[in-house]
Length: 138
Image (tube, rainbow, N blue to C red; front, side, top):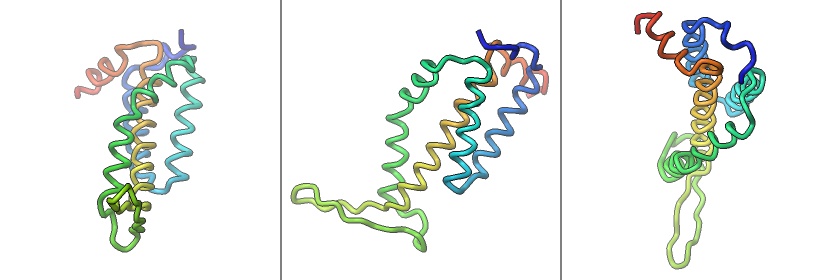
């Protein structure tokens, strides 16, 4: 069972989750996004959530992550920074936007961090988010 998280009021948990979401989506640099995601992982363990559950959360996400990175790799993100690489697949040539794929990876990191933060916010009280939203009249 998570440690001492039951003492945090539900509305504070919701505000924490909103702050993480806003912070992650303002973090456009890969290092900043990775650092914020790392902080969420550290908090995961600080509130006493099990490592196996964290691994399962991330494993469930791999297909969606692949879709996001692949989508960014196949489309133009910013013509000024796009870097296209040709990949030969048999008789077919596939153009991949490597800088777009990197942008997609940052998006994946952002989403994973918010998912982890939502679990941290619920630690010890599965209804905390719903109660916090009710308290904030949302």
